[in-house]
Length: 356
Image: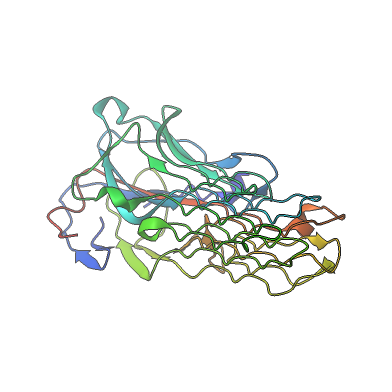
């Protein structure tokens, strides 16, 4: 597992783009700024709330603030092999899409710190929660998207039980994921589109199409819009070892398109927004509906992100109604996208007095 982590070191946020604005601050003499973690999880898990974990670092006592970007793992789309109704899309994960600062309480300064990064849920499974942990207790978490059932899975939320968000950063930086779309109903409604991520967060997967009436599926929800770039210039680094300066670009995108293919066997699945996958499934007969598109996650492009950089935290697309064997996960598809986290530590507030 440790090969999935880069416990490196290095950054001052000399250039910090916040929602289109730019805050500039000169280096503080004797200040300490560095990237502590930049972790990415490409894992899909057939279990609820799975994660990978970083090695533990020890904060120097002068680190009083943490600046965070990231997302949890998206939920898998729902599936059932003997139900005429399509299945709901997975929920998008909770996320922090714009760099957001938090203060560390005095008793926690100078303590051991590590992160956990949530897996993407396979079809029928929740994603995993992404956490910052100090003294092995959770101080911030971006919760997983829930798996779809007949209805879509819930979007994940964000909370910081052990940190205090700085006043300069609005609460809606902590974005709830979009819910998955409801599955189509026999002789009723088609599969519903997944919901966009509120405040630019991760989108939910669309709902799968229904059997008998060939009800179509729904599209995945979008994330974003647009992109935001940062350039973290590190000062007096002593804990990790990341590239200096450390560029970051965060972006969203459109959700995956529903499939227009229905009928028996394995037909064209719902559209992917990798890491999240559209729904699939082996249709039982010619009356089987189509599968849904994946929800859009958030892409982080950094010197350490896997190449090509992928969108993370989106919900999987719902599987179409009334499928039959093979019921292997690769045939079902509909997997949610795994998460990421970037954490910068600082001895002083990097952004203040900026109009958001």
